[in-house]
Length: 230
Image (cartoon, rainbow, N blue to C red; front, side, top):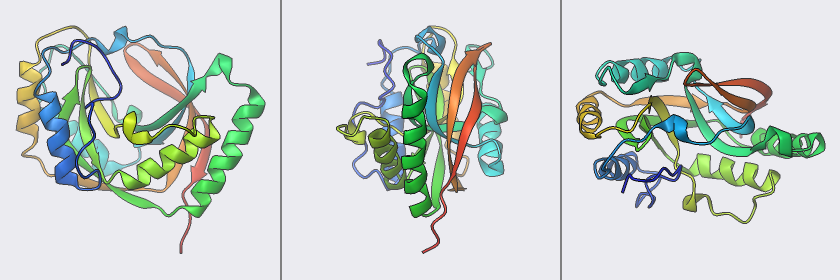
């Protein structure tokens, strides 16, 4: 484990995706079994459209990320700044491959889903990781799986079970080289003494994502309120 880079990590979902303790245990156990950290930036990248929950205005998420970053090793990582904190729901497609009409139709469909959905709470749990990053575990998964199904159907991927490929998480640092995992596993274990934090999700965004200087940046194309009240 840990010798190839996959966005679906851990390979197996938790026993109970809505139980924070179950999600955290699953993520932590998988991270502690990797045999090396990989360079996150070695993954191929093209400008792409993503359905995303941005967290830069979530003060509790920002505070917890900074407290966890403070216990990480100084070398080998690119820390994620507050303005780049995010939770990806799904990649829509590459910018040069998605026709404007397809994009507009998907936005209309997903917007209808969001208007009918209620805002929901998530708990961010420190700390685990993948071969390419350090990250918070996230629970419960049910509202995120619902969003994933909605954007998948609108984006033309309606035959995919999200539990086969989607692992909700919030990254706080990217590994920038191939390196031993021990110091990062130890730091993640130390960070577990910090309390988890709760955030409320009221909006889904469609963004155009790009990479620069070992960071992700994006242009917000659409803001879709999650707005049902009853």
